[in-house]
Image (cartoon, rainbow over all chains, first blue to last red; front, side):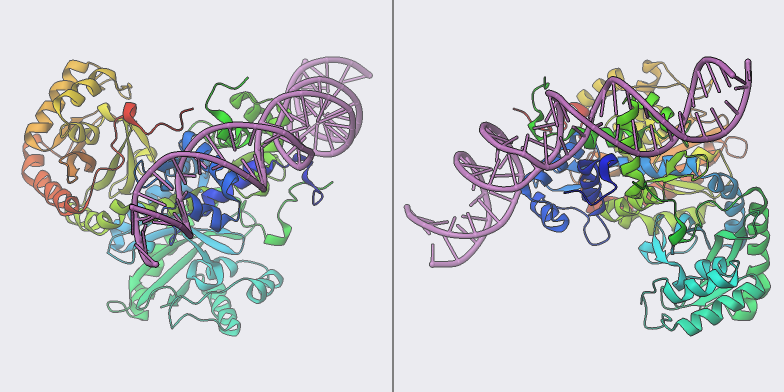
Length: 272
Length: 272
DNA sequence: ATGTCGCGTATCATTATACGATACACCCAT
DNA sequence: ATGGGTGTATCGTATAATGATACGCGACAT
């Protein structure tokens, strides 16, 4: 029996994608049976799907251990993504200048549902590995970028987001209290920037300014990650914020919000 | 009729991947019919597959133009890739130091069949957009990285590669003559580095040193991109090469060649 | 040695599932 | 109006994906 709207849904394809999604931070290479176990797909099915992905060049297969892992094609997907995202092309040169100017790590973050994604990273200092690679997905409420973006939303949506969007603990200092998050967003809305302390990494400070579309809604942010050991709040506001804001403003004008659609208002996939 | 080895090949999945691969530099967003035309898949099939990919979050669909484009999930694939590639984790901090030290754009390139892929990029100057984003695939023979890697291969393989691997013209200065490419590789083999002038971009110089595995074969390279306007050959060899070599050597020891398998010796997908 | 377990691989009949053709609604040009 | 171009939806058919089953191998413990 089919759930409902699925005469134009190809199950095999969806299952194949499941296999791809099974790979993450903690599953970097997997045997056939591991894949089967994690996806819950059954040995035969997994075998066929994994083999297909291998033949098609999406999975590398170690000839001796027979374990699968993401192929270089996964990076080509990112390459194609970059060309398709008009924001990146506009922002990149400005971000490079900014990073060189500041001498600090600069990122471009986009809103994606109730998360933010680091779309571009320009690391200038060594940090956690995860902070140096693109594509990381984080709960918007836990990041300075997410908060400053939310700050540009109408109060109604803002409230709803603060109450319903997910939060996750990353460090002992991560704020889980939605009251505090609310306040942080209010402040961001008034000031036009957000500063978050030790939310993701201890002694790391995140600073963000919003990239605003025609409609006044932000859909991305310029983000800077610095060390709490070398920066005071005052110095940040004096030396970093203005430059971040200039950069964000220089990127802003040309764009329309196109991804920051509230999760519940997402386009219906298809509706019998 | 089936070709032969396909009882464990899922066609629908392969077709879905075809859709994904249809997106590139020149196809950044596509309508249903465009997709159908490019993949040659027929309207109905394309409709179903595209819809599936949309529902599964792999393709965004503009609610008004109804055009598809890569979603943020494409970046998450890169994220997963990075975790799975042991080289990246080792190299990243060293590359960051190098880039800061040189003040020039530094890249990490891996061999992938007869191409090289830029796996990590640390742009310090503005250049062409394509040179700032990861995942770019280039014919190995046309790049300093590819040549210096090939330089570490046994002469037999090296010769074969020079004769059969693809070359492509990017600038009026791109070397298409395989004799010259051969010489360039020989020089790289002796010197331990490769310098390429204006092969990809006019007035851009590429400099690479090899990252070598246990077996003596290189499978990746540290690459630096600089301007011909500000650097002379002598200055490069004096100030850049040594640092590149140090970095590459610092990364090398821990690794085994695992992707640089000659194209013809790639693991057979399955063989009835 | 010997048995067992887990793995990757291969085969096969069954029917669910993906298929192409077809038809409709819509928008923008002629 | 009209015609070509979209995106969408439906339907009967047979292709193509399915799960169970079986085999061969190596690791490990008995």
